[in-house]
Length: 380
Ligand SMILES: *[C@@H]1O[C@H](CO)[C@@H](O)[C@H](O)[C@H]1NC(C)=O
Ligand SMILES: *[C@@H]1O[C@H](CO)[C@@H](O)[C@H](O)[C@H]1NC(C)=O
Ligand SMILES: *[C@@H]1O[C@H](CO)[C@@H](O)[C@H](O)[C@H]1NC(C)=O
Image 1: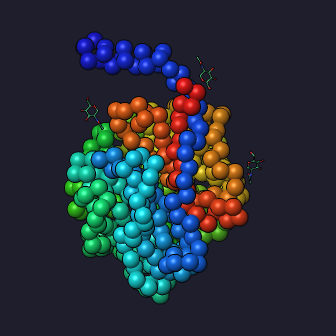
Image 2: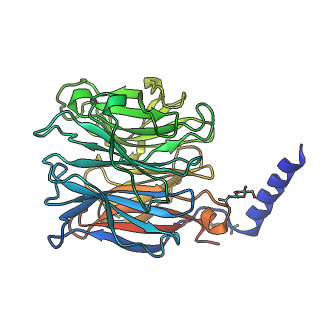
Image 3: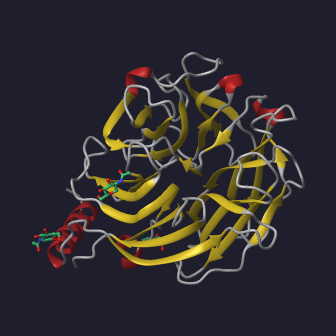
């Protein structure tokens, strides 16, 4: 055994003895980042995304729906930044404005390129093709830690014309072979090509192409209840280099629970053999959060088969084969979409905390967007 390996082993053993490493999560802090209302420019904030930058800043994004709560309609992309791991936040800035489109922008995925430090946001315009066509897959990026943003770039000339809403959540950059450094952004299509698919970039977001696809059944046809319709999704990379995608089972095919599908080739394919239904992860058909941190898989959703309430954190220590019986209920009331992040840093605080952003309300889940800091080792 070489010395470096021995040192890592010793450190790990010492750390485990020094404190109780059993995961026992608890809420350490919670703040509302956005509240909708008829006052001001924004009717409703929805579809929250959360990421760390390479410089350790936290960025929170949401759709700011100008005139109504609906998925169609004109919007901004709202951003708030935190440089102290979520203790304080900048005022809201609007980094994209779609004007007054009838079928405006929809978020979206945020992906951070660890090599260039670029923060890339991918979203759609005219996804529903309501009084417009074709739909467009759009990208903006920041090269200065989220301060300033590029003009929107239309990716259709590179990609093609498929309707595509990424995420909602984060995209990944491959850390382990195959395809180290590749950006992988997964999402879903509309009726013209519905199902789950990913777009890939091997040059830090300069060029994009279509990658893996998991088609709906019946493909390109209207769906009935109980049909197979993989929808909004969150990919995470495991340390074996596989990409595990946690998917909204939109029409409750087979179960009222999450679908999980894996790509073994860096997002080029999603074989049906790699598709499972996770009956523990019961779900009301919603966008959920997933995160891998230090070998543990985390999952957030409104844990219910029929309504968006009870936003719950679960964790798995065996790559999602099973989930620990304990759960953390983050909010028992109305709650919807969620997204998680953590910092892969060297400091104790980075080992200790994960961060969740979610739709939260008293009567309705889309009243506000809330940020939660979770202490994973509250028993120490
Ligand atoms: C570690 O914490 C867990 C959860 O709080 C507890 O069940 C367990 O007994 C603790 N173990 C030790 C060795 O203190
Ligand atoms: C939410 O959680 C509570 C307590 O765990 C449970 O009694 C209730 O049935 C849950 N609600 C739904 C809609 O699943
Ligand atoms: C963590 O430590 C390693 C080795 O000491 C160093 O190379 C790396 O830059 C550090 N990472 C961060 C995020 O500080």
